Amino acid sequence: MTNKIDAVILANGEYPTQTQPLDVLNKASYVVCCDGAADAFIKKGHVPDAIIGDGDSLSEENRTRYASILHYDPDQETNDQTKAVNYLLKQGINEIAIVGATGKREDHALGNISLLIDYMRNGANIRMLTDYGTFIPCRDTKTFSCIPTQQISIFNFGTSGLHAEGLVYPIRDFTNWWQGTLNECTGDQFTIHAKGEYLIFMNY
Image (cartoon, rainbow, N blue to C red; front, side):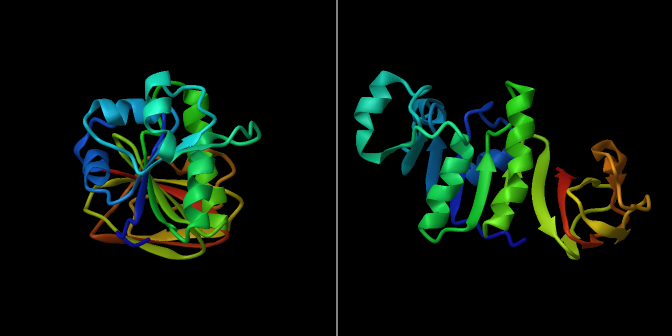
């Protein structure tokens, strides 16, 4: 995963409060808001480049005022976060960060996080920044920069041959998500060896 970001998606969870996601959002050259997230973004003095969704949580005032950048999509078989990712991919933008996707309802947060694997499969080089850390969907062997004692969690999405270098605790082909949580780095990088897909969470 590179640090390059071509677009940021602001989801309609809790608005970021911590430095890392706020910096990514405030410095973004292109911001797509998921429906009602535009209300919070606009209230803080910003103007999104695009608003994506079915319009059910966007205020009437902003629906009218920003009609020219509102991309209405009534599809109920997917969520607004996915609609925003697909919108960017269709424009050839695949270096994407998502913020504001957690908080409020835990079922929505869990769904938003799990969808990162689907986005990776569709060609997105994507990550999700929360107020506590970063989720990164991965495939096969990857090396990550870190700092000593930084906490790391690994979630298995059907991968095999899981083992690692640079972590305190050994890892294996976990069968339940909790089994890969609360590991930590021993140095300034770690490597996950695997064949298949998995999700990394790196605590700030």
